[in-house]
Length: 199
Image: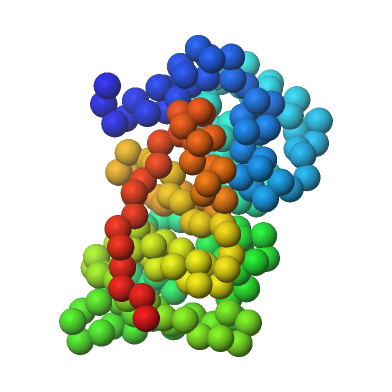
């Protein structure tokens, strides 16, 4: 099966295991901080979409979006190096208000690495990672931000959803210990993130 079949594989898995929007939402809700349950009208809308289109990946995105736990952006920039600081603002918006970014600066180190310095509730945090020219180094950015979240005692982590190597990046912010088992049950493919230097 090619990488481009991951959406079809997810849908087949749901159909074979009698998973629908209600079951998926129930499995994902604890990972999203046990927010308010989806409204009945929204669940009915998702069930209609599921019957008409049979896109498990589309239902997943709709559920995460409903809880404001999903953001997406183009990973190719017009600047060199790509502007990672702007993406930090997008990512902070899906943390349920826990990660309150007040300022973000991007600089280039002598070794050609990107350094991001951000302010959260008056305290500054910094990390570095390799830049990829005009492309956002999303794994490096997420790994650095996840280390900041860990240092702050925030239990959620940024996790990139798999998109078969396409240009956009889709990221959720969830409790990893709860989300990862749910992702296995729901056949959600994820990207991996490498280590970065934190200081």
